[in-house]
Length: 85
Image 1 (spheres, rainbow, N blue to C red):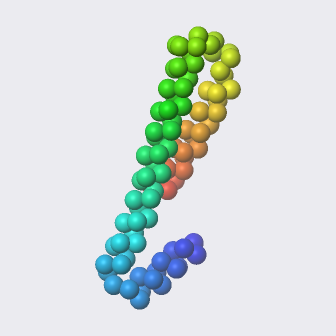
Image 2: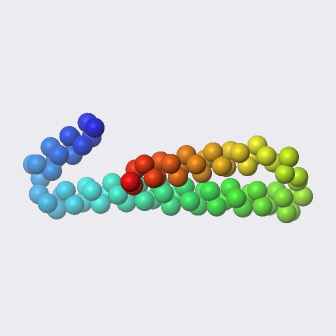
Image 3: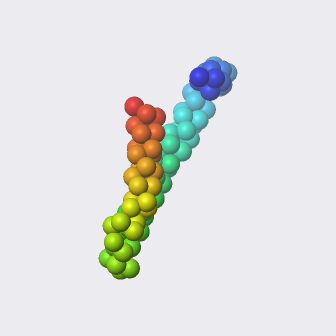
């Protein structure tokens, strides 16, 4: 919560333009991270499809990869839900 107090102090001594600019930068960074997480998750799913379709690996051979991808996706979805809620 210290960040909120620091931002309030900055906004108190600056104009509305700076407040809008700072908030736009923060929200843009959040959405960039969200888009990055979505693309990484899609790449991971593509990796699993490649392993199963091209390299003909069985599900039991790549189950650890699948669990890591599910964990990664769950953490990012949880963080994005918590931050954007």
